[in-house]
Image 1 (cartoon, rainbow, N blue to C red):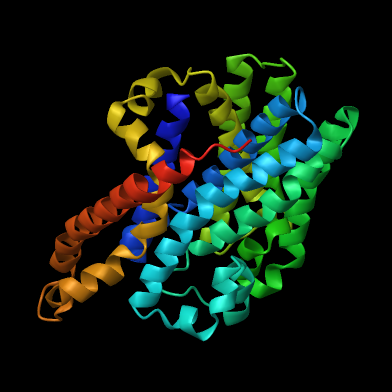
Image 2 (cartoon, rainbow, N blue to C red; image 1 turned 60 degrees about the vertical axis):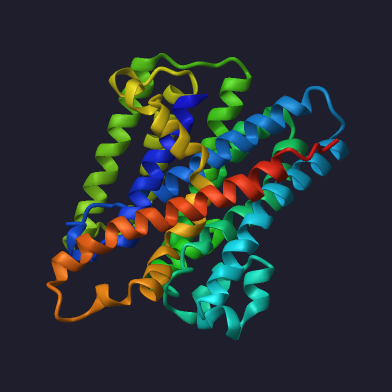
Length: 339
């Protein structure tokens, strides 16, 4: 499904923009939205694979294969990035290494109350891994007739969690796994429908996606303007996840209209295939560049010029690290057969 790889590339571009450029350059644009596209896509792909194997394999075999695959595909590259961050002297790793080694750093960051420079993005890996522990149980053990109602209930529970967590600010709403349930549940819901042969007309899904995107933008802009709508403001992420679900339904069938040429472009597909390594190392790139090209932070350089000079360095370092990760770690772990 090359268009899904293209979507990964688009999401990754937004995340890099969010981490590499000053907040003033974002013009309140939700560049971090790409993170939530990854969550919806993970829910879709994970559930699709589990449902397909459920038809032919025993549950015990499915669970063993599932967790071994995730162990091989996620942790060797993750620990490499973690070791690199430790070598750069990131103090949060040295102060509490067990949180990062066990991949439960989302709760540590919540306790710290700030985003640790260079490694803050690792919180999403922790959340995804926590879902990987629980989600197969839901998909494999919930009776088929209950599956859709259960997933819809989980979708409703996420905004309620964000509502009850609002006193802690965005940190508590983002970092608590059950506050992101709607993203994974909606991706899973799409996979369940497609597995059952239920394919909604494109015009209907487009309408659902556009209406949901409009609702998200209205709630997001209201929030950014300091006029958040009580209670309803916490559903904005759910509306965004519905819009992403509609987009993924198109991409999974290779029918994204005018955007298909972009999503299927070889460069976009390759970036999507490398997205895990890019995600791991892109936020470490400024730390690495700062060690090598320290003079680009000289206060005598015009701030805007300095940013433009740093960006190519970020791209180069991220590309080299992602390539090395893909070549020497990911390809080798992917080649290991899990029976």
